[in-house]
Length: 586
Image (cartoon, rainbow, N blue to C red; front, side, top):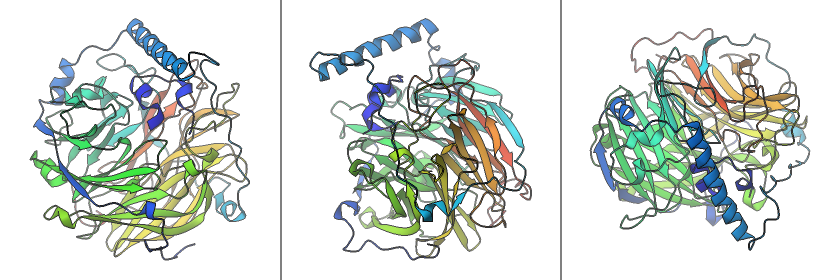
């Protein structure tokens, strides 16, 4: 969810009128005097949690949750909020209603792709057969039914997925469900606020989108993050907040340690990264201001359920920040700072292109917070890119038989930014959506080497765009063997939007995906109730180190709202881990 639409989407509306927009080996440049002052991180501030407790078992909270709304109640609720926002829209236009609902933004016509960018496009599928799906089942959305029936699924879906040794938690915009690895729904759907039932303050009162869930493999715990978008009434120390829930054990349905941290800035589009010394989070202050928040909470304290604090730095002028998220059990070298990555360019300044990836280093010091600092921006050169359709909240991807186009969120790196270590070798992966020479969209992916101290060097890059059409909103992962998997949305004028997965096998030629695309979900209808599409998908690595799990949206035949599909692949040559092993490559 992004700022200009926050209130409406938090209330469950899919209203188009609320979605108008607003070389290898090169050393990175440091944050020297020639850097714009607005991109330099501010000082790190420290604030303690305003509330924290230990919950009853989540299974008990779910059992006590109110029953889902009936279809009639859902329609009445939707009609109420449409009337409210229609009135607000009319007031904005001095009582006049020039057009209702307002038309979506015009389709962005991008400039030609540069020769250097076209040169790294992969325009043919890989030579190896597509990976076989080892799991595929219905996730939250239209057509989903669990032990509690169905739910009220808001758009965009804001897909998030966390995979543990036996269980899976999925969240979409304000709903949550728990599955086993075979796809059986164990609990749900329930509102995401159920995790905070009985918690003092607003965390358990109102459902908002952008809930993020992660499985912390290092600690065998589950972590959920829920942003508070609505202003909190005094006497709280800040108008907004961020809610964290960390499981007390490995049981996703057990007790949780719960926290609310105050936030002075609007906490939109949270991106979570697990790092040994903290849970790091990047957020945006809104769609009409170029301001980001890089924060970290005290992971060690929260794993014990002890009082905890949060450290934050405001970074003006930066693009959306994504913290690195550890895959596997080998941790970074002691003292390695967390990295926050961002794309270049600035959509609000109509700079829709770039040729660098930016990153910041967050040095958190819990013993002496006064010594914590964020440094950067640092830059690593990559092939030139142009945001797909000029960025977020634009009419972008065409659909068969309708005029409505889908948003691509082309201005940002997508989640997660992956960190994995193999002995002395450390790698970081990132993806974004870019324009292609064929007039469609492709997923640009990067593999960087992380050198000491905290310096990125480009190892490989490519734009995946075989056969034309649009590929966008990707999510990437790497297994313990060094294979890379890339999930993405696929669609265009001839194909309804759906989900696919491709992969590069370790040891294959650089800069290309080795496998043909695996079809996880074929779209069967066009989405016409809003141009918002997902906002993000999620790729997650199972604790066994070999199974890639992925979730994304599609529409079933004759459906008006999204469904999600959860699927998994496992690549040849990767031997799954048995038990918990901490050594490199195990």
